[in-house]
Amino acid sequence: MLYGVAPDIGPALELLVRRTAQFETGLEVAIRTLRDRVALLVRLAEQSWRNPGTGTFLENELASLRREILSIDDLLKASVLGKPAAASPDPQVDEPQPDRTE
Image: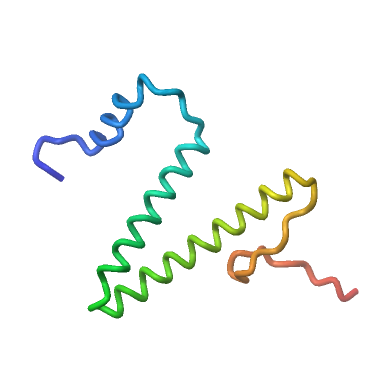
């Protein structure tokens, strides 16, 4: 952090820039932020070819984001079609299921 610069200066400047623009919903902000995060991770992954550990970490982060996006897409499809969402392909993301062997 620069000396004398408030940590929230970035968000404050963004608000000033956007004040004349159309109001964004929370979902629009979240999607834009996610898009920016993915773009940053992709750039960093491309630049980390000399460091396998960092490259692996960034690839894992991108894979995790991909799984999250797919699970959100499943929820959106279910809400539009009125069907229950499919289980996530990642067992760590799924909630534990009750034992139904009774």
